[in-house]
Length: 149
Image 1 (tube, helix red, strand yellow):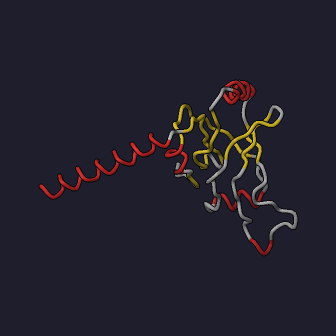
Image 2: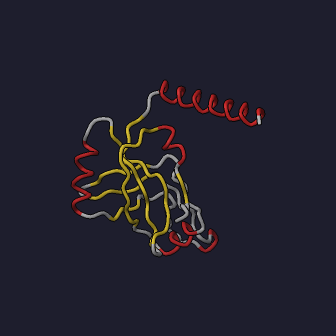
Image 3: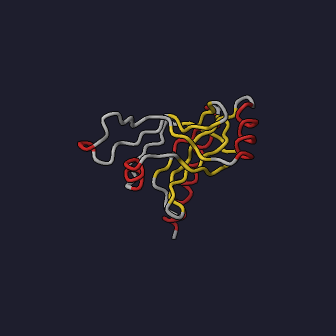
C-alpha cells in the first residue's frame, strides 16, 4: 500500500501519540486527482464541526484544470468517514489540552481513498534541535564506519 501523499513535516513537528484511519468524502475529479498523487497535506489538520470531523487546509487541484467545474474549490473542507464509537473517542481526545489531529498520509485501500491521521502533541523547539543533532551524529558515525571498511 504505497502512499499517494505524505505529511513528512508532521513527524518532525509533532509527537505522534496514536494513529487512526478514515475514509474521505470526495467528488469524482478529486478522486482522479488524488490517485495521481496531486494532493498536498502540508499545513492541513482535522477539525470537529458539530458531530463530524473535517479535513481542513489540504489542497487538491482539479484533475483537468481547463475542464474543471466552475464552482470547484481546491481547498474546501472534506468530511471524514468515521464510526460513531471513533467519533466519540476523538471528541474526548480532541477536547484535551494540547492535543491536535493531523493527517499523516493518503493512500488507497481496496480501491477506496483513505487518510491516516494521528492524535499528536506539539514538540518544543529544544526537542527538534536534539533530534537534528542526533541525526547528524548518526550520519557521521555511519560515514566513519564506511571509511573504516
